[in-house]
Image (cartoon, rainbow, N blue to C red; front, side):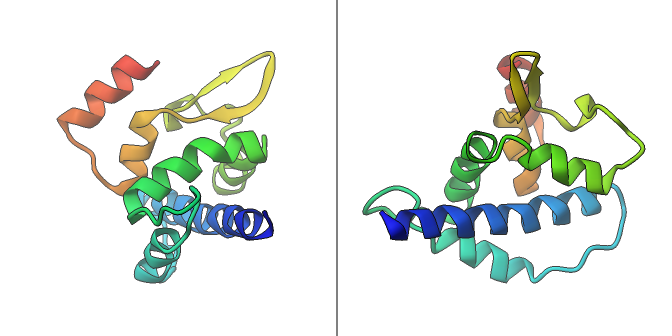
Length: 128
C-alpha cells in the first residue's frame, strides 16, 4: 500500500511539471523542464498493481485521477499560470457546482501529450 501511495504522489508531481510545461508551450511562454526525465518518471510508475504502462497511458491515468486525489490540482496550476483569467473554460475539462475542481476529458489528455489533430477535435466534441 505504501508503494502505491508513493507512486501516486510521484505521478501527481510529474503531472504538475508536465501540465505547467505544456501550458507554457501552448501560451508561448518559457518553461524549462527535462522533458525526457518527466516522461520516463511517468512511464516508470506502477499506478496499476503489477502493470508498468507507457508514458501516454500513465499520463492519461494520472490526469483522470488527479482531481479525485486533489480537488484543486488543476485550479491551482491554472491559477498560477493564468492569474488574470478567473474561470478556465478555454483550457478544457468540466466543472460542476456540486463538485469542486476541474475534471478532465479525453481532449485534454490529447492536448497534454501534444497530439492535436482531427481525433482530438472529435474527442473534445463528444466528451462534453
